[in-house]
Image (cartoon, rainbow, N blue to C red; front, side, top):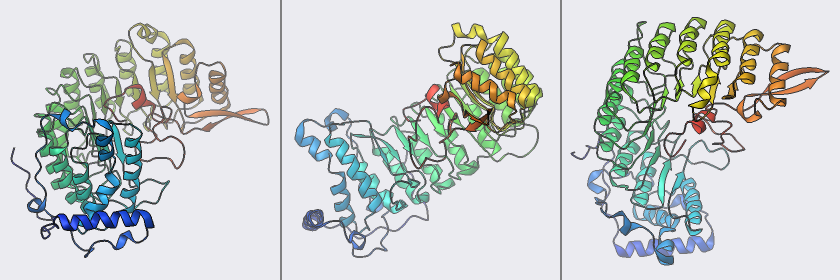
Length: 502
């Protein structure tokens, strides 16, 4: 495959970098700075307005075929690998770039991990939405320096740069990194203002990449054009296991293209196609995705949030689930499903023995739909415990369900031992509902970490308070305190893990 062409918006190359003499001065300056503190780094570089070079100025390094030759061995090799902070400083000096204090701090933490003896599997987390420390968001030019630094570093297997300012310039260097980094298995680029051109570059780089397992492009408006390049890539790439293109403004054409490609692709285990830009009321994309589920027996996780799926579309998906033997996590939240659609889902759950997690939140199944589900889980789903490896989970958040339906679902948990997780916040609680779920928790039918409500008593009456638990509570954001990736707040991904990073 030819090298991807630098787009027209890319910056011009700088003058050739300094020679060994200049590099020596940079190292001496680094040593002086370490003795004297970190004041004044932002003034580094002769011209802060300089921009990162394009292909003509980038180093063209061919990765070593034998990865074992790059593996750390002995104390000297370990010490050399634990110099990311110093190497970043020197590289900024050499390229006349302003030092990003946030990157510098994160690299210091990575160096400390390496010195502790962690020789592989480190994820460099430079998330721009970090609330616990001061953040200087990473630009495309900052990512150019970072990509040169991390290229072929054997300890680094993951890179998280969500919520930064990479744009299409940073996407170009991300594509270059994917071509040269032999160890990277996880890359998170969500919400970085990457457009169709940047999406094209990354998709083309993945055609030859054989190491990346999980790519998250969430929130980058690659649109239909970029989506088509990713669909084409999946016809070639056989190593990527999970791809998140949610909120990317995909069009009908690209959604259908993904459905077509996934009928043949046997590598992808998790796919997120949330919130495409669809027109019309015929649910054409849902029909194609349903056909894909009949043919694909490798996909484990599928997210179809905000697809305008109605009862007829859910019927198509349920018809496919009669034949599908691999899907364990189905997300149809934020659609237009009512209690009539629950008839089809309740019927398929009587014989489908693989589906473990269903996200029905923000639909309108109401009491009638909850009763359909409750009947199936009480009378028919008990046999599934003999063949399902894990438990059955359900999210019915904000479905306009009242006391009758919620109490019926609570009774299902007492008779069905495989029904372990339920999330009900946002529905209409009456006193019977509060008492029912309080009893479930007291009698250990429902663990506190497996639901999003907690009972409390005021003046002798039981009420329910909201807990920060759910199937994917921290999908878009991270909390200001506590564990961001705990099982209780991200139960869907914890129970049906796909890929290395969830």
